[in-house]
Amino acid sequence: MHIVITGGAGFLGARLARTLLAQGQLSLAGAAPRPISRITLVDRAAPPADLAADARIAAVTGDLNDQLAAPHAAFWREADAIFHLAAAVSGECEADFDLGMRSNFAATHALLERVRALGTKPVLVFASSLAVFGDSPEQPLPEVIVDQTLPTPQTSYGIQKFIGEQLVADFTRKGFVRGRSVRLMTVSVRPGKPNGAASGFFSGMVREPLAGLPAACPVPDSTPVAIASPARTIEGIVRAAEATDAEWGPRTALNLPSLATTVGDMAAALERVAGKAATALLDRAPDAAIMRIVKTWPGRFETARAKALGLTADPSFEAVIRDYVRENPDAVKLPGVA
Ligand SMILES: NC(=O)c1ccc[n+]([C@@H]2O[C@H](COP(=O)([O-])OP(=O)(O)OC[C@H]3O[C@@H](n4cnc5c(N)ncnc54)[C@H](O)[C@@H]3O)[C@@H](O)[C@H]2O)c1
Image (cartoon, rainbow, N blue to C red; front, side, top):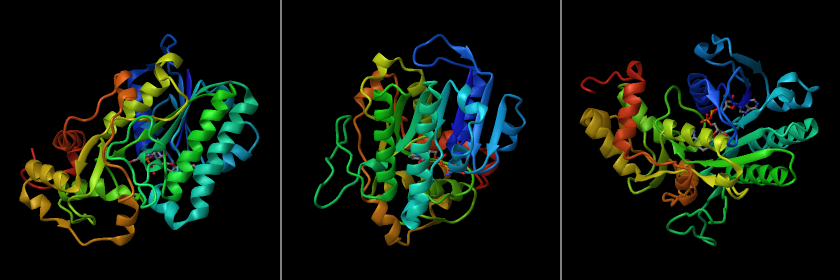
């Protein structure tokens, strides 16, 4: 089986590739599992060294739009499954409208057109976002988002993700692709360096103090947040590819499970794991630009459809932090963190 991951050098794309390589096989849309012979990572950035060193990995480095404007490369034709994760992130899209339209809207459309032209009908999993739900005075979000809640995005990123979902749904309805869109929650704790996402501090406020570094926590304690760990998120993305059409159900995007928490509770969990020395490193100066984006996002979901697929939320944010500590021992420098 040949798999393509766009954004495959990014945080989730690389983790997805590692997960697929470790399991060695994949069942696509309910078919019998087949061994994974190759994973092609398409990204502007080069893949991490561990992936580059694996013989089953092929890296195609360059802008996705350029790749899709070029004549057919064989890997598109050979792809049994495409995980479309390449995207400009929320903060970048607010700061640079053209970047978001190019990377998130135009590239998604071009990818679907490429697949349509090939006639190969791969399973295509599209990483959408909880940012398709946006609160506004004219249209307040319900207290709890359910599977049937209508997206009302309030940011360029959210709009672009919602358009992507709709394109995936229509290309699927027309039989050009077997598309499944999953709405990812805010993924925390993200290892490595901060990125341009407005949600970046939800990881930074844990990752940096654990490394003994100061971190911004620029929104009030009461700010609600719908969190999922990297592991739970990848589980949802893989399950989307595996589900039979009947299990998957409607072409509408699927809300992945989330842990409903608040910034204050996250800080308290950090303190339980790493002590007051960790929370003392949090800089609580407010950032109006980040608050403007984050406050439109929902904090509480009921994800019956995901539950029926066997997907569950993380048990607690403390457990999420402990997973991060276990998985990233070299990134934890604060004394006394067990
Ligand atoms: N991490 C989260 O909290 C979160 C939440 C909701 C949705 N998502 C979505 O999940 C996906 C993966 O997110 P991530 O956290 O791994 O982000 P990331 O920034 O770590 O990875 C995205 C990758 O896409 C690549 N990329 C972006 N535009 C490209 C282009 N035009 N051509 C080629 N490569 C391009 C980047 O180089 C990067 O490696 C994205 O679609 C994102 O919108 C993430």
